[in-house]
Image 1 (cartoon, one colour):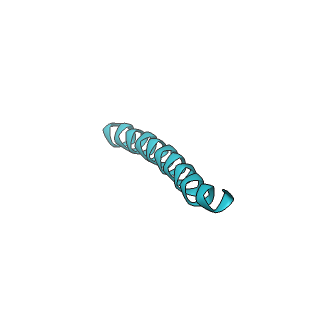
Image 2 (cartoon, rainbow, N blue to C red; image 1 turned 90 degrees about the vertical axis):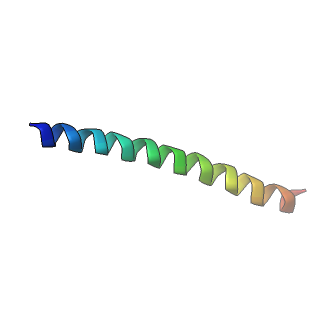
Length: 38
């Protein structure tokens, strides 16, 4: 039971980490593309 709770917390942590990576990736793409666009 304790291990399952730990794995659930770890899964939630990975989901937050994935969201942060997605946001950073979008910001990075906009930062790279914008100079070429103008």
